[in-house]
Image 1: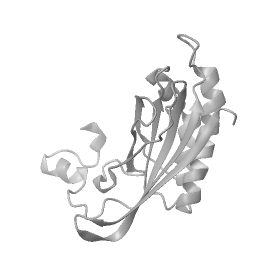
Image 2: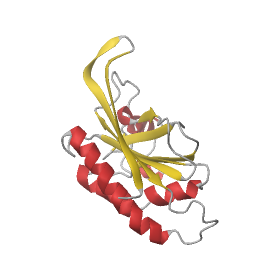
Image 3: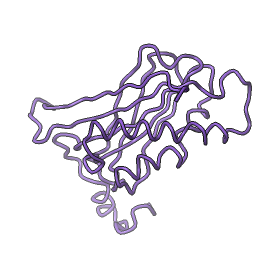
Length: 199
């Protein structure tokens, strides 16, 4: 826990979109942790596994709890995603190392009963860099109503030797979504809707 400098919770609720009241408000939640980059200042580190094993499970547990506390339950979460922003003294690979491991993501996936993979973004930037968390339906990758992105920033993070690690969630999809799902396109183009991953 000493690696975490601070955590932040971002909650956004949309009641009106396009000048029209939403039938169901869209709630977006981002749970973020500002952590010391365990590889910063050490030159090029070939083996990242010891730090992944030590740090990623803690972050997965802490951030998942933050999401669930705000959402009320794992069942309430409809779409989810993850993100990392690495400070300028680190590599994008350092952020990827912490979020692209089952030791991080499985805490969240299990807690919300998800089937699909976590949508993701990993970038590098200075303090106040945009934190982008793409979201996707937790059980259906083709459900376009839940293609969403949470965007926020932290004025003092990441410092050069830090990483911001984040999880995102939505309760609901885009208000007034009307572009259909991926399966409708597949049907129109004559593809096998039963096996959309093959296209």
